[in-house]
Image (tube, rainbow, N blue to C red; front, side, top):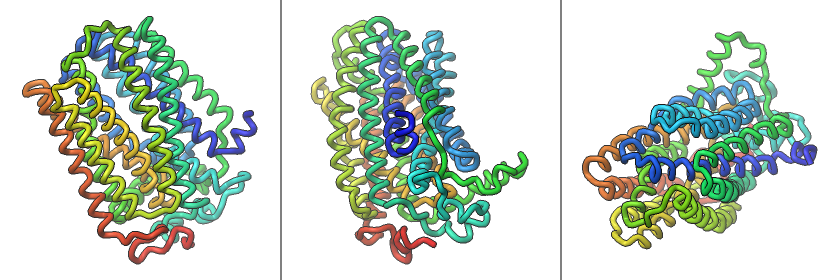
Length: 458
C-alpha cells in the first residue's frame, strides 16, 4: 500500500485534501463551544478570526518561499503536525487569550501547506519515476539563472486540463474529509466539545506521521540551493518572493484572481464568524452544546455533500483550459455566493436564512479550487508555491481588515447590517475577474495576447 501511494503522487494529493477537510472539521466543535457554551459576543468572535487570518497574512508568503527554497515535503509534513497540535491544545483552556494563541498557531500550520501541496504535485507528476525534468529549474540552474529563461511563460506540466481537474478533485476529497471529520467531531462532541477537538487534532498528527513515511519528493530540484549559506539562502528566498510578486502583478488574469481573493476575504471573515450566531438569534432551539453540535454537524455535512456534485461539474468544465471562460464562471459563482449571504443577512425566516447559508457555502467552496487552478496554470515552477500562496495571503489581508471592521458593525450596529455589507462585497469581488474575462480572448490553451500556449515554453 505504501509503495503504491509513493508511486502515485496524484493519489497522495487527494488524501492530503481529505486530511485538510478533517482538520477544517475542527471548526464545528470550536464554534459551537464559543457561541453556545461560552456565549462570546460578535466582536470576540471576530477577534478570534483576526488572530487566525493575521497570522496567515504574515506567514503565507514566507512559508511558500521556504517551500520553494528547501522543498515541499518538509513543509507539508510540518503543517499537519502543527495544525494537529494546535487543535488539540485549544481544548486545554476556555480562556479567550489562550484560544487566540492556538488560532494563530493553527493558521501558521495551514500556511505551510496551502501553496506547497499544489506545487508539490505539479512538480512531482512530471517526474514520474523520479527523474527531474528540465522544466523544474532549467536543468538545475539557480533561481536567478532560471528566471532569465522561464519566468515569462508558465513551465510545462503533464497537461493543463489534467492539473486543473486534479486540483478540483483535491477539493472534492477535501469535502469528503470534512464530512468524515464532521461525523467524528459531532459524535464525540455530544459527549464533550473539548474532547472532539482533541480527537480531531490527534487525527491530524497521525496523518503527519503517515506523510513522513509515504510522501516522496523526486520532482523538486534544489540545484545549488542546498549549499547556500544562511545569508545566501535568505537572499535567494527574497529573490523568489520578488519574482513571484512580479509575476502576479504582470499577468492580468493572476492579478484579477488575487484582487478578487482580497475582496472576498474582507466579506468572508465576517460571514464565517457570525453565520452561526445569526442562526442562533433567528430562533435556533435552546440547545445545549451537545445538541447544537449535532444540529450544526448535520447542516455542515449536508453542505459538504452538496458541494461534491458541484465540484464534479466543475471538473468537467475544466477538461479544456479556457481562461476567459473560467474567469466568467468565477465571477458568477461569487455573485451566487453574495445572493446566499444576502438571504442569510436579511431574511427573518429561519429556513430561508439557512437555505441562503447553504447556497453561500456551496458556491464559496467552489470558487477557491477554480481560482487556485487559474493561478497555478499562470505560475512558473521556481515560484509556484509562492504564487499560489499569494491567493491565501490576499484573502487573509481582506480578512484582517474585514473581520474587525464588520465585527464592530455587528457589535455596535446590528448583525444583519454587517452580513449585508459582506454580501455586497462578494458581488464586488466578481468585478475584476469579469473584467479579465472580457479583456482576454476566449480560447482553449494557456496564452493570452502575445503569450504562447504553456507547452511551447522553452
